[in-house]
Length: 629
Image 1 (cartoon, rainbow, N blue to C red):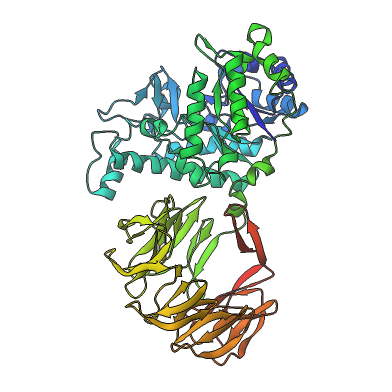
Image 2: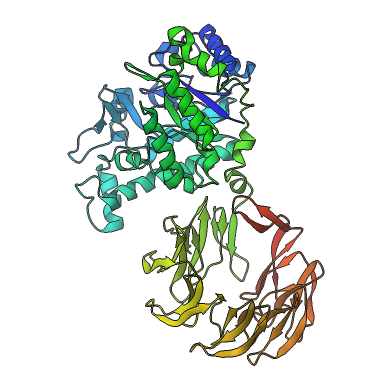
């Protein structure tokens, strides 16, 4: 499936003027080879459909231009007839009006107005802005989105360079200033592009987008969240549009950066930059760039358009959205004819929401939440994330989309910015950014710089780190305590650490001296005086002298904790004691070690390949907790 989209405007366009015009346009687009249309439904303080939200708040149900009609309903019917998907486009987003001093919205609700540092109504490039940080304004915009999703058979919703967005010159309203002052104990800087001030305001918009995403998919899990921001990072610095974070957190299903260049070489250069710096291989299916066909006196040449689309396909970009419809009809449909006879001559395939959703995270966010419990099995924290790790030292690593952050037991979150994140151990947590590892404290401050090719968490005051293909050990000041000399290494536990040389494992002490000979096929950390080891494809347990206490006999096993260890014989897991006897019968499809007298177990699940992570994960079945006997 290719995604071939077109924007339909109310400015310089007559498409929405009548049902007949709409039908003719849908026929034309289907014949040309498109499969999705983005009709404007919100601009200049009016909707292009009868809106209960607008009627109740402002006494105006629809743009007077369309009084007595429902252009959105008409367009949906005509598009459906020719198999075109419809994603309504909320063009103005947080902008209230254009060159109208705020228009009818701010006239009725002046407290919704955005202010610059001088206290004036926030105006940028002729657009007057609502305060995007005001909860009432956010609720209003969200209500518009939700009423469209609830009342119309659409494929999703779309925001653009004004949603979620806010000029970086804004944010100086009293409540916003007080909010910033409370968090940082200082007033917002006069410099509107101060890095901390930029990020703080951009995060508010990203958090609101998280809410929008969740509320929409709770109504219809197949709804596509489509955004068309200006180009990053310009959009971040000027309009607080942190689109890289949106993609990283899985808050957008399709993203259409407005690559509105008038020269193909500039378009190509920015596509290359996006693929190198912003979109990973896993994120690439979401990238469907916007191409400018006309603006003011500018008209794209047929050669430029064909070059851009051909280049998209050559680098794996499977679609584009064109701005806008009228340009296809100029010069006796010149551009449309070029598309239809060439690059769009083959059908694009039906716009398939389920197929698009496969590349995202909606399925994780509509199939239940993670819940933390304490030993008495009371709910202590319920949070919505895509993955979670257990609490350790009062913090838990949590994942949204492709990025990890940390949450404390009050629910306070750090920013999601790590590519991987491990539980806290001895006050520090191992994190990765851009293939380098380092360590942070509980404020998310980097304590040991991102410098290692791989690493393990701290234990016994030391951490295993990989430098130039070999493993060694550092202390908390990043001083090398045991030189990098091993092919692999694990954390210290009970004063010993398992290390690997020439495909065999042994154990060393904290001075680097060998304590258990390199004769094992694998070895885990010591716990309760025993270490899980592998010999000839079977698992057993040794003591600190290297003697077998439990002979290798299990198909899989895990570490001892609280006197018991999960072990697998055949297809099922149970729990053994330190004599190797099952004291909890092997009835589970997966079992985890005990912690505070409870253990996590699964029935009915199995290991499957997770394409999102590129690894095999245990999936399915039902999870629950058991108590120690």
